[in-house]
Amino acid sequence: MTYMGYMNRTLFTEENMKNLAANPHVQQVSETNITYKPEFKIAAVKAYEEGFTPVEIFIQAGFDLDVIGHKKPKHSLKRWRETFAKYGEAGLAEERRGKGSTGRRPAGELSVEEELQRAMARIKLLQAEVDFLKKLEALERQKKKR
Image: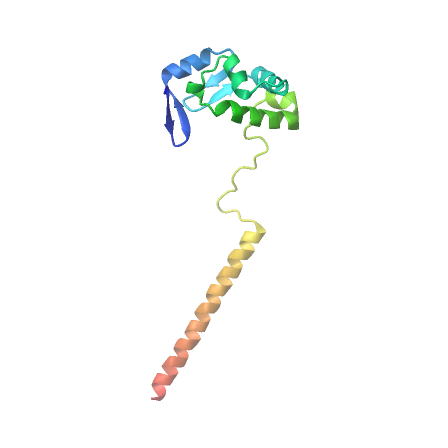
């Protein structure tokens, strides 16, 4: 095997990265990612619609499945077809990762529901403390009477 799997991530070797970067359908390669050119994505979606399988499309494009992973064609085409259906060719022509993401909320910012849940939990805790102190006072009064 020419790649190393690490926690379900493919780590490409220097040689793999060099070979992938030489492929005319690759825009960019890192140890863990391949960014395909938009033209390839569009052509791949159209070829799929004409009846070619994802594996056939990637092999015809010069990709070695032993390097990129045998599931990569199917997963990539599924993602690209969804993007194509939703945004058309323009969706595949631009990098969409991260678009529309609201990101993480700052740690101190809570939704109204979360604030209410926390307040209710705090009220329960304080009520339990009051009940405990009342029982303790009652026990102390009983002890003094004896």
